[in-house]
Length: 248
Image (tube, rainbow, N blue to C red; front, side, top):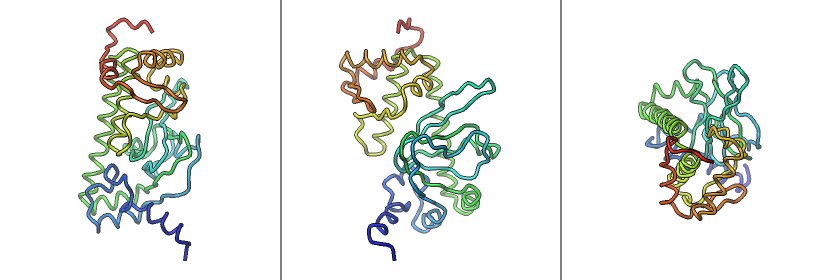
């Protein structure tokens, strides 16, 4: 029999004992249905920083739920241009991009040592046919992803540099609040170059805007996190549109 510490770790890694279950696939499943889903989930070993979960062009075999840590998705176009598509934190799910044609259209990479729950798609498909509540949950999660993508397109298309960074910080803060984490502290564990790429900004502009917001005592910047000091002021900056001359 495994030692008690290992048994407790295994117990905490099941869906029924996960503090993030209400954000993930198990939400609203009854005990019997949840047990069926748990049989598919592989919590696996830690994934170290810069390790790919899947690569652009790979066949779809699994989706991944972030248990702890963080990840990014990246796409490379025909000209070789790399674009960061998103950042993912505990409770988020990666791999939905492959559902259309059973191939991934981006790569997913761990930003730090992280744990992911792996769910095989072929077995999930069979279980979805059996459990209508799981089908509804999966559809809802996909809709949320589309909604977030639309919100980000609006941010990139209509906001100036301060608006983009402020919107990102507020969005990350909102996601932390949903997870029961302190909403005033926002992790920025990605490289600044990745942040600039994601927001379609120059690297020096990102640094300049963060410094300006800090000098205004709206945020406090550390190496891998930002503390929100004045949420109302940050919200006001987030509403600034691109039609305002961007002098940054």
